[in-house]
Image (cartoon, helix red, strand yellow):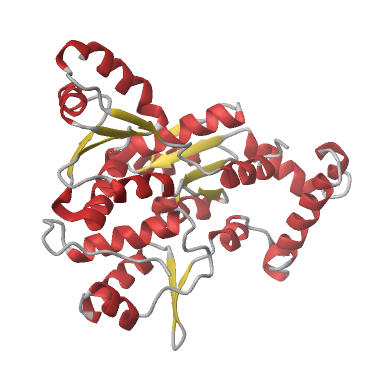
Length: 327
C-alpha cells in the first residue's frame, strides 16, 4: 500500500498535499485503472487527517474525472481507455456498444500477427481508415497556465514517434477541432477530463498518457541529509509545483527546495549556485548544463546533476504507436 505523508508544518494545505499525491499516484500508474482507493477511514489513520477532509479530496478527484465513486463499494480509478469508443458517433455503435471494442481488439491482433494496415483494411475498412485519418492530425493539449507541460509531452512524442505534432492550449482546443475533419488529442491524465469534454462532442478521440513515476528520484530524495539544498528544474511550472508539494510531504523542512524553469535566468542562476543536487527533466537538462558552465567561476563545488527519464512512459508511447498505425 502506498504511504501518503502529510507535513503539518508546511504552508501548503493538507488537503492539497493529499490531492496532489493521489493524483500523482494515478497519473504514474502506481494506482492503475480499476484500482480501489483506500477508504476514508484507512487514509485518516495513515495521515492523521479528518475523514471529512479526505472525503473532500475524493470529491475533487471525482470532479476532475480521474476517479469514479461507486455507492456502497468505494472510490475507483477511472479507466480512460474504456471511454475511447464514446468519441465515435455512429448508429451502429449505439446499437452494438460492445462491437467497437471487438473491432479494435481484432485489428490489434492482426497487427501482432504481421498483417499490414493495408491488408487489415480489406477486413475492417472503416476502422482502419478512421485510424489513418486520425494519425494525420495529432494535437497535444494542456491548459494555458501550464502550457509548458504540453510542450514537454510534445517534445517526447516528436522524438519517439517522428510525426508532426501541434501544441494547442486547452482553451483554444474547441476552435482548432472545428477546423479539422479528424484527429487525435493527446494529453496528460491531469487534464483528461477537460480535454474529453471538449473533444467528445466533435467525434475526436482523446488518448491520455502516463507520466514517469520518478521512483528512483524519490529514493534519492529520501536519502538526502538534513539541511541539503535541492533544485528542481522543469519546463513545466505546474510539474515543478507538484514536485515541491511531494518533496515537502516526504521531508518537510528538512530540505531546502528551489524550483526553476529554464526560461527564468534569475532562478536558474540562483539554483545552480545554491543547490547541492539538481533534478532536471530532459527538456531542461541542456539549459541547466549551460547555466552551470556559464557560472563555473562562481561555483566552488558544482551540484550533482540528475536527468530524469522521458516524461512519458514507454507503455504510453507504444499505445500511441498502435492507435496511430505506426507499428
